[in-house]
Image (cartoon, rainbow, N blue to C red):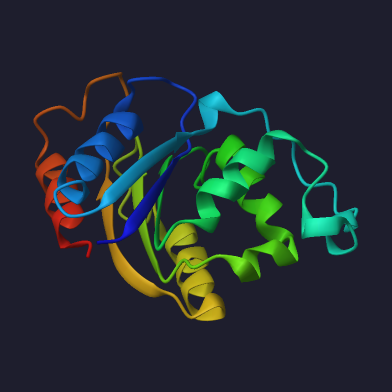
Length: 178
């Protein structure tokens, strides 16, 4: 049994990214403890590169909403990143949280597997390429195991993802987490 944390990078509650993450969580919850963290529930400003987290006691960021996120990540074995695509990148809100992992505190996390779920409105064949490259670099740098990806194109309006085969794919991916 693993502790799975899903970081949902959409501010749109009950939107396509949120629905996909919940479907994954449904499958993962069959054999794991699962928690969804939505960026919509936290106020996290962009990292300003002050590096005070390197000298501050506990390596905490001065951004207080990050304390709760750090605590959840500290307990995670598996981290799942779920984001809508905005201009060929993850959401700014999710990027702010990820950038706040610049702290040496990340070296205390037990995360060993990483998964990625992306939702985009466009149908472009290379829509996800920039993020997939960054994802691979993170896997390599932190020596994480790739738990899998679910990539969804052509969903824009709230609920467009319902009934799509990628929903079943997300559920099946969740089932594989152990």
